[in-house]
Image 1 (cartoon, rainbow, N blue to C red):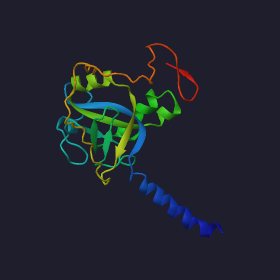
Image 2 (image 1 turned 135 degrees about the vertical axis):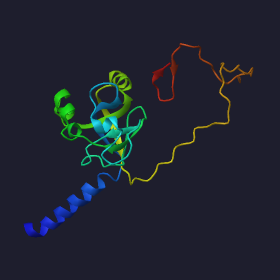
Image 3 (image 1 turned 120 degrees about the vertical axis):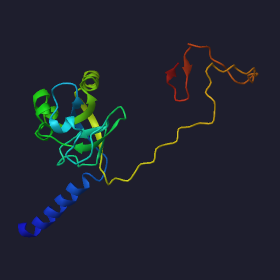
Image 4 (image 1 turned 180 degrees about the vertical axis):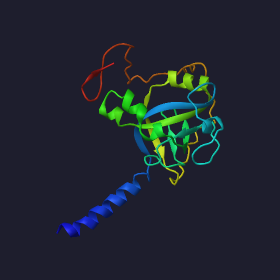
Length: 191
């Protein structure tokens, strides 16, 4: 009986694991920074702008554990910034920063994403102005593109409050003064 279920369990596990990156996953990440110029904290590959995928490192790239976040994925931060996963490193793979800084098991088990900056000053300014743990969305490289909503409006924006039109109130309508209690149709008092 168990031998008949084993292939089904294996097949179900394979389907679940391959579909894990088929949608936009949200996960907790420890965001660290690294840079190309301006002091220690870089290696010779980073100083030469070389990533582990062969792409030239630039602003908007990040290092990830490719077993957790595939290369080519886009990591979307809560502020809307999108980072391309093109690099990796041993500290990212072993999650050293999350294990040391995490206060709870959830934080200690977070993935580590290393955001690339050109200079040390830019990297430290970003790190000091953002929390160390963020919920990020991971968009895999094979995910269909989501259409961005068109938020343009042909209506001009009024910078001053509208001038009330002078209209007569019908005699059957009662108008409540501002701040007085009004009974709504459901019978509850409201303002």
